[in-house]
Length: 421
Image (cartoon, rainbow, N blue to C red; front, side, top):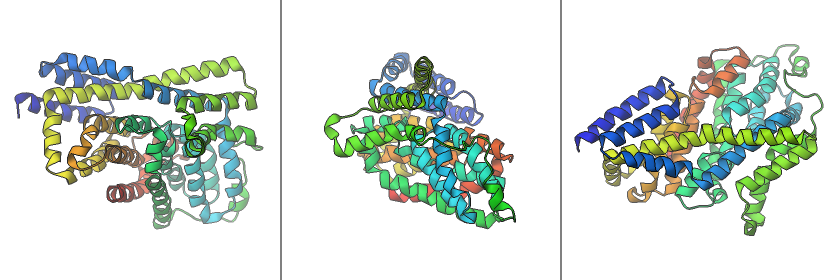
């Protein structure tokens, strides 16, 4: 091991510290990557990786179009119609309202795969209804925060095109290969959070609970339009149907998102100019926030390669296959808990280690999926996660109180994930 290896280890430790302190993720990863490349006397490797990552066509198409569509759905309030429509039958279920709400939120998560977006769309409706039905505010917020796992069934989630490209698979093929495990994680979360509710004594049915539960929540629409409510799930339905019944079409994520956007424009009769502006603004936002992290993670991984860290790490994993699996599961999980965001950990791990998966007895899609899901699970258990903070604010409680209810489910999920993948 050379001195550049040990210098890179110091940089990695500093990187983890900076991420825990919640410094700008892209700044931290870019700076660390360039520092490691320069001390290794190979600065051009970082610049070349930057060029390569920022012009990755398949990722740009999938991620930017998905974020553009999400922006249009938010503009037209179709997400609120979907939430209101699904919530209406659930208001008189008593203690069964908790798992029922989580099932509904899990379904919505496949259409709104951002934790912050899901929290903003569902929280103002679901949390007041649950509180009025006799649930404590913390468990009401946890019921929404613990429903993100099914979001990974959405092809627009940035990790799906990223890992499927590494594994040379179609996006829907990758999602389908791991769909059973993804659904299992969602069910585990629902069951464990429901049990946690009883353990904490978080449900107490008052006399007027049923009547109060019928009251309209803060952003609930009294008469949701079913055509509006369908809009958020149009791209997902199109992609699933195309992959099962019409594979010859080879429908791209961007095509499905554009059709979904056109549908939302037509049924809501929104201003085409405003919708177009919002769609492209969303695309730009997707490049800046999501692809920005992917680019920065690529530069960070390039710095690790230049310093020889990846070579040593891969050699070690080659002779200890189980360590690779442990690292893929618990590394991104712990970093997500500490930082509130699993994206940096998952992208960095998948960029640096996952391509070498076959050399230590794993598949690329299997190890990539493991890191992706573990990071998402860790975010659910972090009081620093933006979605958890937002839900805590809506419920009027501390994020720590919410995490006390979501953390047990996260621990059970990551352990189960380790043995399933």
